[in-house]
Amino acid sequence: MHTRHLPLAFVLAAGVVATPTSPLIAEAAAQYQSASSVDRMIERAFDDVLGRRPDSREMRLYRSRVYDDDWSERDIRNELRRQRDERDRYGNGNNGGYGSGYGGNYNDNGRPSSQDVDRVITRAYQDILGRDPDTQGLREYRRRMIDDGWSERQVRDALRRSNEKAELNDADIDRMITRAYRDVLERAPDPAGLSDFRNQVKRKGWTESDVRQALRESPEYREKNTMTEAKARDIVRNAYRSVLGRDPDPGADVYVQKVLREKWTERDVANELRKSDEYRNRR
Image (cartoon, rainbow, N blue to C red; front, side):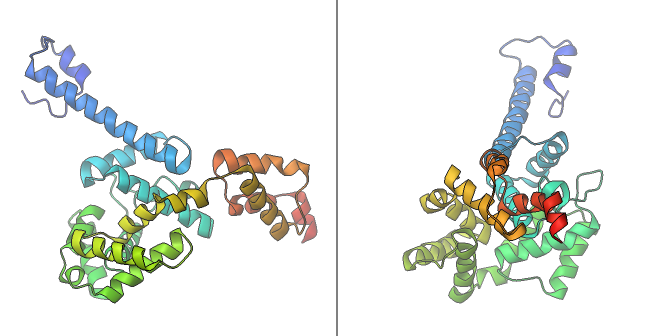
C-alpha cells in the first residue's frame, strides 16, 4: 500500500499500528510535517513582504507553486514583491495586486489562464535574458504552456539553458544589473557592486530577480526602507499636498498608522483621499 499522498489521519484510521518503527507511519508523518513546513514558509513570506497572512485561496495557489513548480521561499518572496511593486506603481491588480502566482486569473487546476500566459513569458524573458520575447519565442512558449501544460518554472528553465543565455555579453548583463539597482536602490551601481553581480550572473547563472533579491537583502536597502514615524508622516504629507493641495490636519494620523502598521504607500493614501468630500468639492 503506497501512502505518499495519504494524510496522516487517514493512515491512522486505516488501522495501522502506530509504532515508532512503522515505515508507513513514518512516511505519512514525514509528509504531514513537510506540508506543515510549506505552509509555514508561505505564511512567513506573506508576513515579511506584505505584513499579513495569506487567505485560503492564496495558500492553495502557492502550495501548488511549491509542489508542482518547485518554487522556493525566495521565489514566493520575489513574486509577492513584484506584485507589491506593480501595485504601488500602477495602483491596480486583482486582490489589491497581491496573491496571484502568475497574474490573477486561473483555471480550476491552478494553471494560468490564457490571458496571463503572455505576461508570464514576458516576465521570464525580461528576468533571464533582459529583453522582451520575440514573436517566435512568445508563440512557442505560449503553445508550450497552453497545449503542453508547461509551468512558469519550465519556461524559465528552458530560457536558462538557451544559447542566448549562455552568450549574454557584459553589456547586456550590466544593463540588467543597472536596471535592478535603479529600481531597488534608486541609484546606479558602484563599480564593485557591478563587478560582483556580473560574476554572479556569468558564473552562477543568476537572473535579474536574483540580483534584485540580493539588493533587497542589503543593509543599504534595509536602512532606506525601515519605516519610521517621521517617514510615515512624510508619505502622508506628500499625499495630502498632491491630492488636496494642503498639509495634513490632526485627523491625518489615521493614515500615518496605516503606513506604519499596514504598509500603506503614498499611492494608497492618495487613493483614499480622492474618495473624500473635500477632494470631490475641489473638482
